[in-house]
Amino acid sequence: MAAGLQFTGVKTLCPVSLRGGGSSCCLPVRSQRLHFASSVASVAEFSEFSNASARSCCRSRVLRVSCDGRVVDVLEKKETKNQSFGEAENQLTCVMKFGGSSVASAERMREVAELVLSFTNERPVIVLSAMGKTTNKLLLAGEKAVSCGVTNASSIDELSFIKELHLRTVKELGIDMSTVTPHLEELEQLLKGIAMMKELTLRTKDYLVSFGECMSTRIFAAYLNKIGVKARQYDAFEVGIITTDDFTNADILEATYPAVAKRLLGDWDFDPAIPIVTGFLGKGWRSCAVTTLGRGGSDLTATAIGKALGLREIQVWKDVDGVLTCDPNIYPRAEPVPYLTFDEAAELAYFGAQVLHPQSMRPAREGDIPVRVKNSYNPEAPGTLITRARDMSKAVLTSIVLKRNITMLDIVSTRMLGQYGFLAKVFSIFEDLGISVDVVATSEVSISLTLDPSKLWSRELIQQELDHVVEELEKVAVVNLLQHRSIISLIGNVQRSSLILEKAFSVLRTNGVNVQMISQGASKVNISLVVNDNEAEQCVRALHSAFFE
Ligand SMILES: Nc1ncnc2c1ncn2[C@@H]1O[C@H](COP(=O)(O)OP(=O)(O)O)[C@@H](O)[C@H]1O
Ligand SMILES: N[C@@H](CC(=O)OP(=O)(O)O)C(=O)O
Image 1 (cartoon, rainbow, N blue to C red):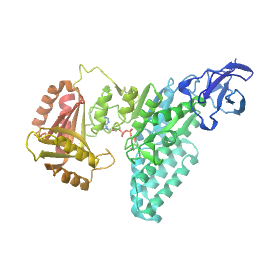
Image 2: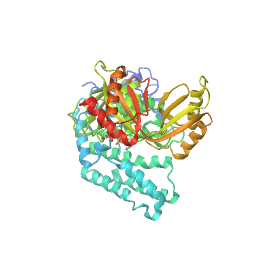
Image 3: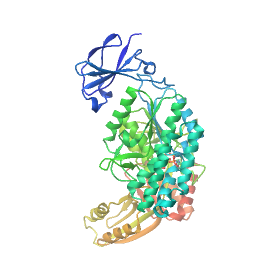
Image 4: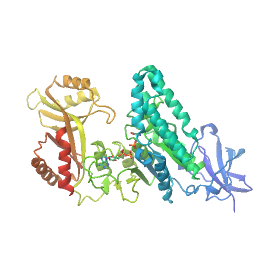
C-alpha cells in the first residue's frame, strides 16, 4: 500500500514536496484545520501512514519538517487501535454531555460508556459533570471548613463521602487508584487551608468545586482506555474555555471558540482519542484562575464546544425523558415535549426550569446546532429536539415553568402624568446597582417588576441590597416591596395569547388565585404571571391539568 503523509499542523506552509517512508508526495494544506505549535513555529509536523485513510492503523512516525523542507527529526508514536473511533478522515461529529445523575456511580459510568459506544457512527466529544451530588457536597464541605478548625478539616463528613465515592468507583471499574488519589489529597489540603484562613472566597469556592469534574472525567477517560477505547481527558481551564472573572457565575468569552477548536481538533488530527472534557469549569481571562459557569453549567460547556467545533449535534443526557411539560417534582405526570425552538428553551431555562442552564442555548443558537435532550436511564425515549425553528401552526402551550421566591417591586412616580424620563431613571438605578430585572409591566406613572437575583442560581439578593434599591428608588417614586412571590411562565405560541390567557385565567379564577402582575414580552414565546409563593404550585398543577390533560 502506498505510504501517505498526513499534515498535522503548522502556521502557513505552501505545499511541500518531501521524501518519507520510501516515497515522495505533495502535502495538501488544509487551512481550517491548522493548529499552531508555538514551540515549533517554523517546523511542520507530518505523520506518516501506511494507509492514509485509516489513522488507527498508521505506522505512527511523525516527521518534523522545517520550512525549507528539511526533516528535523522523526518521532515514533505508539498508537492503540481505536474501537469504533479514529478514522483518519473522520472529524468529531457531536457533543454528548452527561450530567451528575448520569455518572453517579461505577455502574452508571459503565452504562454511559456502553451508551456512547452504541453510537457507532458518532465520534463524540464527551462533557461530564461531577458524579452525583458531588458539587453540593464540596460546597458544604467548604462551608464547614470555615468554622471547624484545621484539626477537624480532615474529618468533615462530606469529604469522607467524596473520598469513599470516588475510591469505590475507581475500584469497581478496575482502574488505577492514582487516577484520583492526588486530587483527593489536594482536596483535603485545600479544606485545611480554608479552615486555617476561616474564609471561603468565591474564587476559592470555584477551585473547590472543580475537583468534582476533574475527578469524574479522569475516571471515565481511564475506564474507556481500560476497555480499549482510546480517550483523552481535558480540564476545561486548560483546553481554552476562557471566561469573565465572575467567580461562581462566569460568562464564556468569544476567545473560547477558536481556542477550543484549535486544541481539540488539533489533538484529534494528530492522535485521535475521544476527548473527555470537564463541564462547568473555565479559566478567568484576567485572573487565570479556575472559574465556574453557574450551577448546571455543564450544559453550557457542551453547547460552547459544539459551536466551537461546528459539530452536527449537541446531546445533553439527563435523568428525565427530555424537557417536560412542567417540573416533574411539582407534577409527576408531566410529559416530554418533543420539539422546542432555541427561544422557547432559553426562556424556559431562564424562567426556572432546572433541566437546562439558562445561558446554554446561546452558543447553540449562534452556531445553529440542534440540541437533543435525552434520558441516559431510558435511551430509547425520543427526548426533546431543540432547533432554530419548528412548526408552530398547532402549538398552543408547550411547557409551564415556576420560579419561586421572587421579589417584586411596585414603583409609582411621585411626579405628574406626562413627565418623561421616569422609566429611564428607574432603570438607571438598577444598572448602577448591578441588579437585573426579570419581568416588567408599566403604565405611564408606575412600574411593576420582579428582580432577578442578579446572577441566577448562585446567590439571593441580600436584604441589604434590597434596602439600598428601595432607598434609591424612593428619591423618585413611592415604592412597595413585595417578597415571597413566584413567576409562573407559560411557554408557548404567544400568537395564541388570547386563547392561552382565557384558559389560564379561568383556571386561576376557579382556584381563587389573584394574579398580581402579568407580562407578555417581546419574546413571543412567554407569558409570565406573578402570584403568591404559597399558591404557586397548586396553580401550576391546575394549569397543567387544564392545558395538557
Ligand atoms: N421542565 C422540566 N423538564 C425536565 N426536567 C425538569 C423540568 N423542570 C425541572 N426539571 C428537573 O431537572 C432535572 C434534570 O436536570 P439536572 O438535574 O440539571 O440534570 P443533570 O444533572 O443530569 O444535568 C430533572 O431530574 C427534573 O427534576
Ligand atoms: N456539577 C455542576 C455542574 C453541572 O452541570 O451539573 P449537572 O449537569 O449535574 O446539573 C453542578 O452541580 O452544578
